[in-house]
Length: 229
Image 1: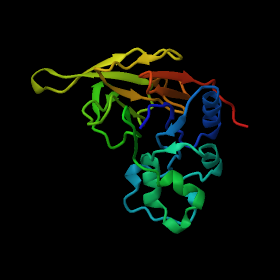
Image 2: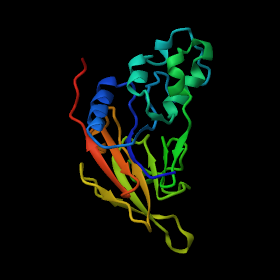
Image 3: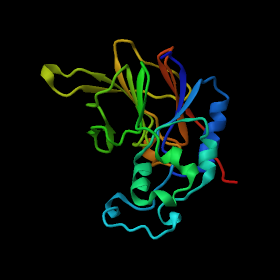
């Protein structure tokens, strides 16, 4: 598979205004493919409430079925997140509009020779320091693991630990608009950050990342805060 420039978005959580702002920013860049790493929707039923939940016939009890999300993501390479999996588990198939199915039934990952792109919820996470999590022990092909789920813009270089101990994790500085080189002898975890609003300590939003596989760089971008129409 040839190396291309990917614009990567993730963790929209139903925020169409912010998704629109991000896609407008992406259109100004030279990318061959846009990838969405899931959590397009926001499930209103918490994961602790799933057991024993009985669907009452109204989609809006589970999520906001906004077809604008599907329109905006038409032609985008989709990966499903944990929100989509929860919605799929809660809503009987015959209640789902046809336009939701590509979003809810997307594959778990997108692979290239350079990177594995996924949402991140099934990965083995390690808390590097209080509140700072990284799937450092994940097994992935290629040079980079590009994921969402944690709503933080961050790049980590993984280095082998001594005597078989867990890998050492080096956090690289992220400066918006400046490419971060991914060295050929390195392995990297790229946390894209979120389209939706996130906690102040996790950085700005809405954000996206451009992964240039040919140049072996990742560049973070930040859109101005949009206003809903």
